[in-house]
Amino acid sequence: MTEGPCRIRLTPVSYAVLGLLATHGPSTPYDLKAAVARSVGYLWAFPHTQLYAEPARLAAAGLVAEEREEGGRRRRVLSVTAPGRRALDAWLHDAEASPRELRDVGLLKLYFTGLADADALVALGRQQELAHRDRLAAFEALEASTRDDESGRHARATLSMGLAFERLAVRFWAEVAAGRLPDPAPQEG
Amino acid sequence: MTEGPCRIRLTPVSYAVLGLLATHGPSTPYDLKAAVARSVGYLWAFPHTQLYAEPARLAAAGLVAEEREEGGRRRRVLSVTAPGRRALDAWLHDAEASPRELRDVGLLKLYFTGLADADALVALGRQQELAHRDRLAAFEALEASTRDDESGRHARATLSMGLAFERLAVRFWAEVAAGRLPDPAPQEG
DNA sequence: CCTATCATGTAATCCGTTACATGATTAT
DNA sequence: ATAATCATGTAACGGATTACATGATAGG
Image: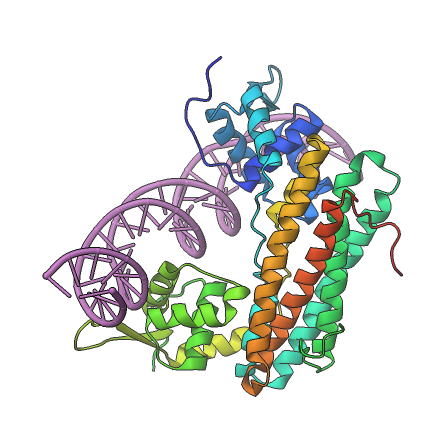
């Protein structure tokens, strides 16, 4: 049993695909698209084209197997190979993961809003508050619909972080919208 | 007065460059690099190469002006043009900014850690807690060093969000490290 | 004077996105 | 039967990262 023919760099998308295949078993790219929408999508969404392109990359490296259906649409059915599973496990057991920068466009705007007038600031606050409220509502709906789903404890844990973050963001931007620029100084210590 | 010769798509990097030039006046790419490190870097860092490449793009579009020093290093000195300033103002006055997905590798791992054993989970928690503690400490140092800097109120506001987020992350990952998988259900409401 | 680090840049790669396109199903 | 939407892809583009490279300045 030889290893994959060529080494490729594995990105988060790679591991998401491997993880979804390992979780749900053999799937078509379309299945993956649906699975993402139902699961990690709120945390990390990718366009469906990536779910067609990425398996090809992984297949070239021998980490997933591609089979074509015989009849009708001749869809690709993907599954994890043994090397693929090993790569996934290695990733999961490697605790290293540098935290993401915020990289939020709203915050970047806020940073420079001193260059504009106060109206721009308040408008930004309002818009951001609304946007985060929407996401919060979506997360809460998702939370409600996955209660007493014992199998998804890890998924619910990440969702928990998502909810906490959105609540924080709503509070933050509501302050901005009210014309009160938050300052870290009077810390609630 | 004609507009820039060609339209380009302006990305967050573009506006960061425009914003920094508008704030600090004419600068070389190296100045920009230093300014980023001192300012927005904690929120959104880019490699220095982008601070050489991006001004070229902006110059081609007429949004910044490039001059070469005469003596010695013949460095490029960049400044915002009138159209550049208008583009920046338009961006600042457009409140639209879809919030960023979390897209955190640690959370993605957490999502799939049901596929691995409990050790992996705890190790991940520990590592993430440490990483976020480090960032929190860095943010706190930055906060302390910018106190009573009246001109940077907007900067301090974004920093305030950064601090709050890191505190949240530390709490969250500490739970994971302790083997307690957070669940959104018992909401502190 | 030599070395190390700072400062300044170029070039290539590659992933992610956007745009486009078309074959199946389902509904009316 | 036709329209509409679902399902499934291909192809090109471009920005961001990575790797490489070299000229100045300072320290020993």
